[in-house]
Length: 297
Ligand code: PAF
Image (cartoon, protein in one colour):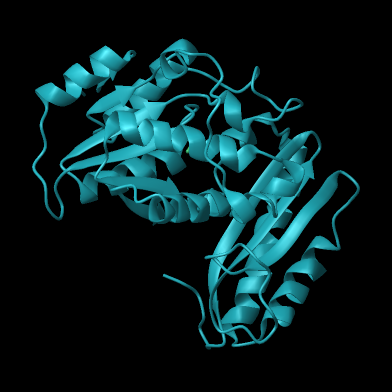
């Protein structure tokens, strides 16, 4: 198993890219997967998808302080570069760019940042103000540094995918954005680096998020309307104990992140966020409303 080439500085990155030119055109080029490390099978599935779409796969590992709130887990966020590199070797990543803070921000905190606008003010933006602005700012910087033809993001962070897609359209960033499906444990729990914080009891309780989404999905598949989908998911969430604190359950338009009316037809995302003990988890499922068997591809 060959380890990917590890580059830590801008100069090393530029040299690695210059030494490994890629062809252009469909199925060619460079695929980039951006991560904050602490990799799990969900991240690896993004790399596998990038491999299908491009000749060369570059993975970035950077715990981005701009997207953490003051009371969040920036300092304790799990970091294990050696383990991450071994995992990435197993899925054929070619290059890993793992810069330090001063490499990414040589001038200190950025003065000019990207704004997610209205997309960043709802759902995650209510509990985590500025989170999406911070994520988009680093995503755009990493795009400039790594120059992807295609970049793969996990559907698990649905609002982030929406905002990245909108950013590349609004700012004419020359990259295709691909959303890859959420990877789940056998019992349905969506993989997340933050699952590592859950005790066995909390992990069991966290399954309520998946059960709520599954209930909403069943109702959508039966061709029922948006209110019925919301009600089915809420009914499951109503049964949780005091150690599960619901943040939001929302049925949103994937272009605007705004709640859809009951009679909406077409693609929607049923999204949920909750605090399980001290750990905040998010999950979602893409659906179609107004059609029987209405689950998105
Ligand atoms: O999804 C993530 O892990 C992060 O938000 C990203 C895209 C790597 C930006 O820091």
